[in-house]
Length: 370
Image (cartoon, rainbow, N blue to C red; front, side, top):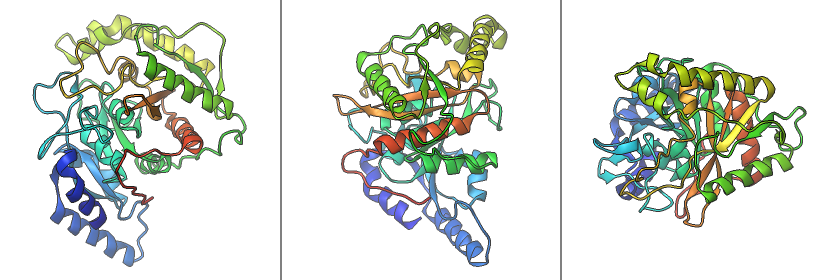
């Protein structure tokens, strides 16, 4: 806890990842954890400092706190009037991307991704209603897991949002999932050494999106590394994945029109995805169509173009670091699995990490607790 607060004190004035820092409450919680451990109690995440998304994030962090985590602060979320939710607003101003201060970290789990990428905390919670965990994970070069919609309580009345986590390392994300789900996650046995590697289909655009050449090329190269190492069995045959553009349905569900207005295109995609996951374990895509944009905004581009279909369908999805572009900013590879198959996503993340390691933003520190 003290180490995390020291790092936040040194770095967050420039980063803007935290809206609030809870020094006194964190100290009290850490002392309580120490006392419980000294009394012989086993807490699976004893003493791990975490950031929680937004000022009300403690409402959904209960399982992590019960497992021994120490919340050290509320991470930044977008301020009012920020289109597409790709900004963050910390206690001292805007949240910046740890890789380039003139770029945004993504959103709406902006501060959580920036804090994890910069090594301020090893874990931070998020929530994902259109890509709000996966987009900032991709742009900050960390892992971002969105769990199956409806599996755990969510304050979102539309059902589009699901809990999630931002983490530097696959083992840390797996530890989060083990606590949240109550089940252990089998780690990847290492590329080429696990029998029955998952089958996968790569889609560059889901049939409707228009990704830029560099995010697409880096995602494709990440897929090829996984396939060449035997971590996935890539299908290169069959019809390409062609979903309906989810934008109209997503806005209908989110807006006043309600879920009934989205029933047609949503039902089409649900049937297509159900058929897809009958024949394959994983759907792989770029996480975002573009790299991180500047603080002046994304223009007319939807950073969520490749993510929000799976908020409507409810499938679990993860963003895995795919590489760093010519502008010095990371992009991600998105993996999607059948409902309830988060463990497959986390095993893939472990294999990807074993192949490439973790690459930290320049000038940031490491933090490994789990």
